[in-house]
Amino acid sequence: MILLSSLLGPVKPPVATQEDLTSAGGVYRVVEYSGSLVAEALDGAGAIQIPNGDRCLICLGDYEAAEELRQLTKCAHVFHRDCIDQVR
Image 1 (spheres, rainbow, N blue to C red):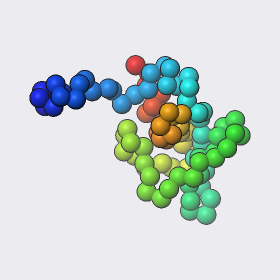
Image 2: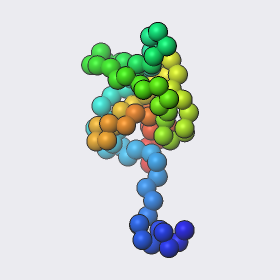
Image 3: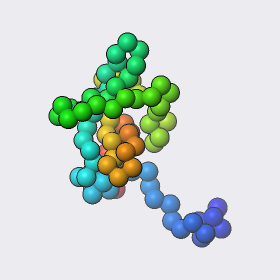
Image 4: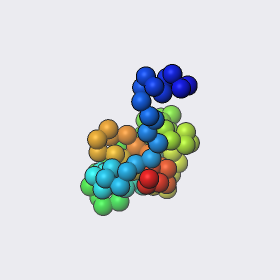
């Protein structure tokens, strides 16, 4: 592990910085339509289709209806809001 760390550099924690949250695309709520999940922006600015089997890459939990998500602008990845809003 030490050799790997010396080659790749320090590991960044899997949480967003305040700058990431400030520039994030917003907050979404998961809604289920006919068995498919869609994340709808709380401000009405759009929606994101959640592919079947997608999950939060931080906690590895599946997305479920009524959960809040956040999409980061730079990478467009979607995470549970509670997982990504743990500002360091």
